[in-house]
Image (cartoon, rainbow, N blue to C red):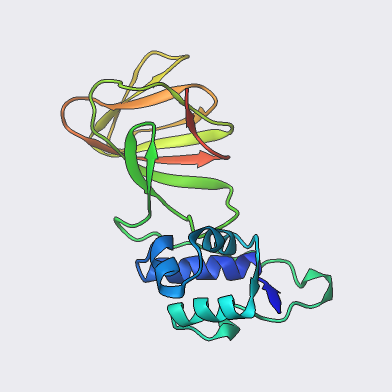
Length: 196
């Protein structure tokens, strides 16, 4: 017997895993379910055998009812409009964006219209290429001073509280204004940001 997990059930597994501070590898070791399968499970992209589903529930210490609920004919009701993702201070999924390390928020939501990133800007000189992505972005300096470089405008100095809304397809890079690190919030609407 196989069970198709909904995207919501996969997201619930991801949330439960993260609430425990576990990586995918941790859950794999505790459940005996291969890492590649777990990734597909969390994305709602695979069907599971009953035994595998039981292993996941035992590892997470939850009842199977938390993940498998009957779905009415026609796919069920549309998803609720009132969703949220809480991002605690100093929490989030570690990320690296063109040499800038930071934390990505709201990663427990499978479908989102934008991605919030809190990035640490420590280098006073540019060391890599420019970042670009489809869509638009908003940048705000939370601490310190940063410089935004682009392939269209002269370098822009930004202090704490300053923000800039921009076309993310325009190549951009961030450096610290001086030897003091800066912390910035980057909200990107769209998909993957890549270095060019």
